[in-house]
Image 1 (spheres, rainbow, N blue to C red):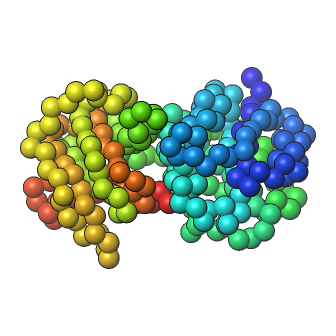
Image 2 (tube, rainbow, N blue to C red):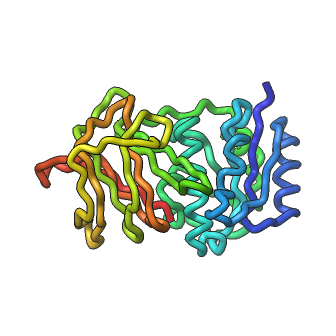
Length: 260
């Protein structure tokens, strides 16, 4: 099976995409891609997921500059797509950002992309690095939690949250920095529940994390490998705070993901 590279162009630079496609093929890799569409309402970020998650796709290359990260809707869509891909292929799935200048740095990337490489378009070793990324086994990176995204134009964007394989939470909590939760539920993993029974649900919990304050919702349901906590926000949450619920404030072990 020929390894394949999927190329996402943020700035619709056809010449750069053509060069990247040619470079991949020169090094014996299959290659295809798309131009990014910024439309959260129509869930446009989902469009390349099937191709990215295909068995033969071994590397995600994103052609971008720092200016492409100025719109929150763009960065949020990329983060959602990356979280979906990582749920399927693992956190260690290789991603390379290719930039025509040095404007984009690691600090500009949201949490899901912190493990990505940033390579200059003019780097003579770009082809070799693409080949290496596509042919190396996906790194197995352990996580204390699992997260997936479910998006639909009718019911919106839902975050599915839970403990890592083998773990359990005696309750769950989640909140966003720049928007509020407007619905939540508990149900079988992998599917947003149509009906849900919530145990001791709580809303409007205020949590201080560093200099920021989050408004969170929570439940006391058991969350394990078979059950997940689902939350939906009224807008882009910016940063997501989540984890197991605890009655003891000093025992709360929460996770923080920057999404924009």
